[in-house]
Image (tube, rainbow, N blue to C red):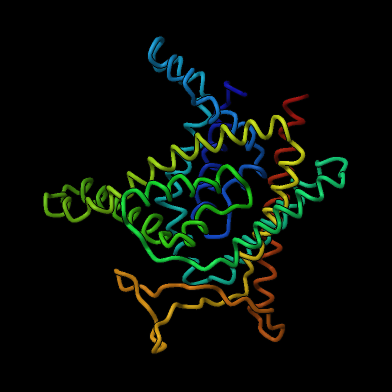
Length: 341
């Protein structure tokens, strides 16, 4: 692992964290795909793996500096900084874009996923029949997940903690979208919109000097939910990383074949041409959650209408998404060549 980084490397790592955080926010898109394409997936997994009993023993005996070095803290710190920045900036822009330009946003991410499949597969090497089995297995699981029906919102603390553990799957396992899993569990809006907005409002009031007891008590329940969700995410992130590191070490190609399958299967989730199907009661009335929002039951996917101009704009955004992945690959290749030279 690289422990000495130039200023430009540090800035780029923060930017990659921003991209990873933004991808984690979009249902159907996996932050792990960004880590793969941007070339830091394995360092990310192996760094998290070092958060273990030994590293905490170093923290107790030799202090924070030894702990920081052991877990590759410079790398993780910059990456997490980018993710935090993303949740309060790029993620907000994505929320706006998904409301007003939904087709084009899905088109861009659809293209990025297609590009990432090529990126991972091109260096796979020789394929064997057993690898084809893992590829098919990953694709079937990814596709099956995309057609599951979302549950109702649940703000019980134990369930929020469980959501945190499960949601980080998108960061550690490319192709499995943590935000989409949260949508299936019914808590996407609660945990990635409402609680984040509550923290943003809390900080805004505090900076403006307008924070008082009444406002704090009003925002606290949502902030508490965010804290519990974050704790669950941390537990899940470290746990998944230990499992994946062990699997990658012993079954590297099988793991990569499964990941390619997962990513291919996730294309069904981000298919740009779809409409929301809302849950209804026996009278055909749309059901609302506790906050008065329509409950999404499923998505109705359809083929694009070639007579519409927006179809071709969406195709253009798919091409842009592919181009972004290709550009990232070229940058990584040239950077590796420069470091080796």
